[in-house]
Image (cartoon, rainbow, N blue to C red):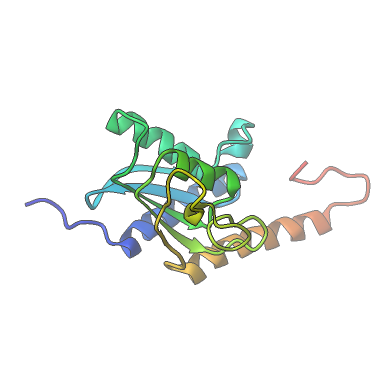
Length: 168
């Protein structure tokens, strides 16, 4: 008997687990998974610090893996589930890849481009619109991020003047 299809909540739990993996290499804990027909296709987390690549956002890495797995760049059957509202770069990639649906957890007041600062997924001037389901497990996703940044600030405050902090 095949496994039950992943719900948005269950997929977000997988994205949260992936986000926690980013902590091992000092990256902002954002995780993303892709789902097709209720089945997991790809799971990735931020890797900018680890790879020194400014484009290594969880969403982009998951989309790349998914395109390879599905054998094409048109991802209209894909639901991307991510712990943080995508930035403009990632939202642009969702539109360009013609992603079928976006689910995100926490809103991003500083860079959110799927409803907060911009709404690239619903801009009728673009060639594709992505339906968005915001706020799935939002408090849990937000707490993971605020805890990470609170720890970074505490570490920075503990660094002596002229010393090099962990984030240098």
